Amino acid sequence: MIRTLLSLAGFVLAWWGLVALFDVPSYLVPSPLELAEKFWFLTTQAGLFGHVPVTVMEIVVGFVIGTVVGVAAAVLFTRFPMVEVVLNPLIIFIQTAPKIAIAPLLLLWLGLGATPKIVLVAIVSFFPVLSNMLSALRSIDPNYGALARILKMSAFQRLWRIELPQALPLLFAGMKVGVTLAVTAAVIGELMGARAGLGYLLSLGQETADVALVLVAVILLSLIGYLLYVALGAAERRLLGWHESRASAAPAVEG
Image (tube, rainbow, N blue to C red; front, side, top):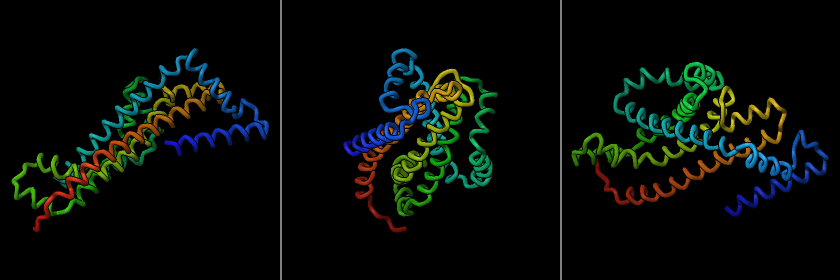
């Protein structure tokens, strides 16, 4: 945390110094003080924090949906390989389609509310979770499968007690990628059409040539993405500590 604060302080000082040194006009690059004044104005007079929860909700809900569907699809594909053979081309097709081209379609189909943004975030978050979860499930030590058969575990017990705990490291890696992409997807959806949200403020700032407004929105979006990433890292450390202690206690079974 101290290193992060020192890095931010160094960046702000460098920004301030360069703007002053080269006498950059504020309509091109505002100084940190001018940006702070803009932030205060937006907070106290323009309802800035009415927009932040909108974007956070779209990111979190879409990310959770994408993660759950990705994990479920990975489990389904490992249980029924033919389903993967049938669905994989469609999944690849959707993932390779430019998200900036998908967003207008979702807006036309689902309206200007939060739903199309949530769907877009879920689509973007889904693929890295699916890919990592599949890799994790397919790399589990076969001895665990033998142990499950000896203990006569049901499919659900095997998933809950063996496969999910063993898949946690790769699953969290996929989730970390997914959550960073989720922020971008939410903004793309809001830029295409929205009544509220930080992406809406970005669009408004662009239309009015308000660089300070754009920078405030960008900084807040980066902060949201960073905090979500840090939260996932904290959850990962907590759960993987439990996972490693359980794994070290697991018996080896020769097939």
